[in-house]
Image 1 (tube, protein in one colour):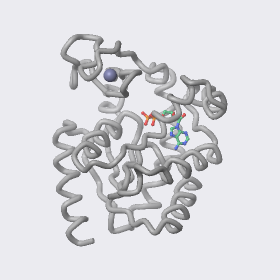
Image 2 (cartoon, helix red, strand yellow):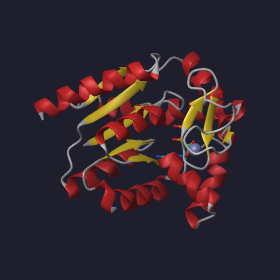
Image 3 (cartoon, rainbow, N blue to C red):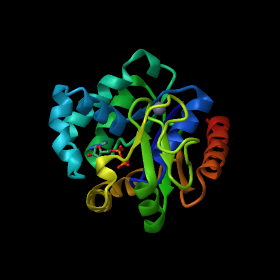
Image 4 (cartoon, protein in one colour):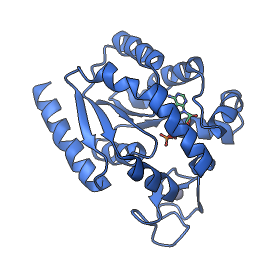
Length: 219
Ligand code: ADP
Ligand code: ZN
């Protein structure tokens, strides 16, 4: 199963991706998570990416394309994967098409998560993340059992630096000027599905599963 998730920062891609990955047993490839991991470990890529991320800018295409190419060739991606956060530019989408063609992969679903500006701001400002296991919470919508502590591993939750107000504004601007174009790039494909991301995550998940059922039956 191969899925691409599109949508603004804060639309809920990461949360939905984790639910789909859990249900269908395929890895969740979040370029944001991979980058943050590299930044924490101070790898060569991490050191290059950090400044862009801190400023809400996109990490250069060449770095991202290399990174994703390497990741999808790993063993656990043999049965499929969910891409969350990639592609984010037309150039990345074109590179991805080449990778898919080369590996003879067909896309089962391209989900575009459409959320209002209010939903996005509300989700990003309340988001809390576990640095240890990557679990995502929201102070109101998906609270952890014990405040500030991860249900899954007990680690402390934190607010991502780029979820702070000024950087959020920049990320949304980058989305509007660069990433939104991907909708017109993909929307004519049969596997393109629109998901109303103003709904609760559980409802989004049900919608996505329904769409996948259709996509799987007809494919
Ligand atoms: P969100 O979807 O909430 O914006 P991510 O965790 O996906 O957050 O990404 C965080 C940051 O990582 C982005 O603001 C950007 O700097 C960088 N990044 C992630 N994916 C890409 C990509 N495909 N191309 C360029 N930069 C990326
Ligand atoms: Zn955790």
